[in-house]
Length: 155
Image (cartoon, rainbow, N blue to C red; front, side):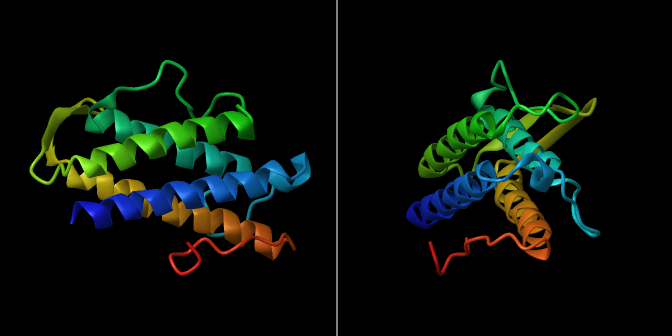
């Protein structure tokens, strides 16, 4: 089972990096694009995707990096987003390999105490990234930008 779990997180990292690499070739005008039904501008969606993954990693026990990606701050650039996505994605792969099936997390979130299975933020990490990659792909393809497939069949 751990092997399949590792593979899921390897795909997630691969797809995140592939999308960030595509976006690294875009001009500022394309990074400002948005479309109805998506999170927002391409740049904001990428910041949200990477920042949220760092928060899931922190919740799972790695701790928040000193220079975490945060929404509402100046755009850090695609190279920085890629570096952060690589670091958090690799950590998730490592954590998945430790077979954390029975691990329970406890802490506070938004000022409220919580206890939850580690599976919750792990599931959310993949679901969240998939959803927001789809948002960026929708925005770009609606505006004539070719985006490679990032699904499991291509991986």
